[in-house]
Image (cartoon, rainbow, N blue to C red; front, side, top):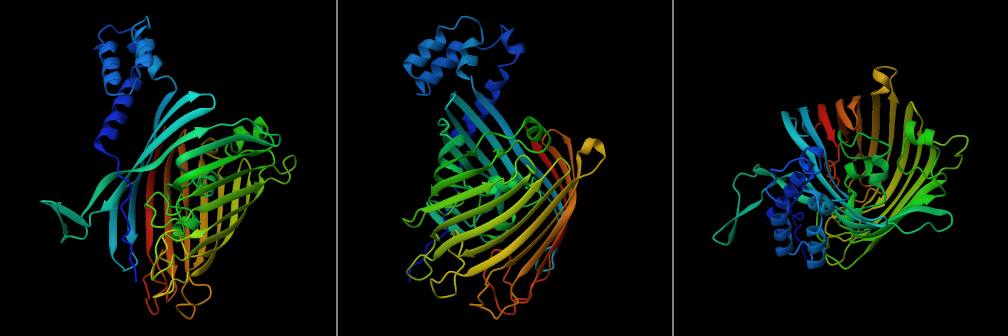
Length: 448
């Protein structure tokens, strides 16, 4: 029997954080105040340092040094760079699945989004993310020592996205194409999160269940079927994935997602196809299919278990209302942990989810009422337990977009476990009898 320890997420070193901070400070130099200032410490010294560190070539260094006006050198070097953030600050009160009461503040997302446009067809992105990670060991004199306090946690920076983006020319009916090479978006979750905008409340249905996450190392390409929809739809409904006849996304990835490194040689092809059947009559109506086929990232006995997903969704969007309904069947999961005990046989699961959002006729339609219902069966063939192992998740609340992309959200959520459910993301366990957790949640989403 072979075992594989789960590897830690990729961490971002002090040097990368320092460069990010430097770029942020330099970004301030692009304002008119800087351009008119003569007290700046000196462009030449900065550019010489960048050359010495290997950031600039000799040719680039010479070109920038030849710039005439104060500040023009740095501004030219920084041309096409943008820096932003997407962060969630959360306060939740509730009971967990063991019946323990809690109330706590949390940072549940802390993206630093750095992009550089090099040419009209080539750009680059790096996005570190803050996460609260449990410390399992410490190192003393070169030796790993297990921590006595299992609740010891710390904020860490880990890598979420790092990719080159290429924009090939249109090919007949296939338009607005973009290819990501590196740690990029997988085809499904980024797409769904642009229909259901409340990722700050919690993950989407298939990720919440534990099947896969949103990013992985690989190569992908996506685009539209036909041209974009008209300006009215783009402005009043959604500008994302707005192909006239739909959109598509295909890629090949390592498989385990950005949380872990690969333990096998298997590559996972993934694909999404979205069809907009009536763009002139009902432009907000779409039908979607997502699939993947591969092996899980763990070998419980001596083989890697199956990892397959088939997911279909119907969605509708207009100026006032959004609705989605989806159904999924899976074999195993990305991490390879959903298996029948002491075998390599992947668990067969299924589930469905419904989401609705309505803009209320107050506050310039910036106040939204939303609700969601998930049902997930982690063992649809009863390979481990004789049924009664599903969970039902219900949440809903109000969201107020008080500034562009800034949102205040108030929500209530509960999960109802059947008798043999082992817990969310876990395999069934006969007679587990978990308490039904609940929480009241307040979130501030910050984005620029």
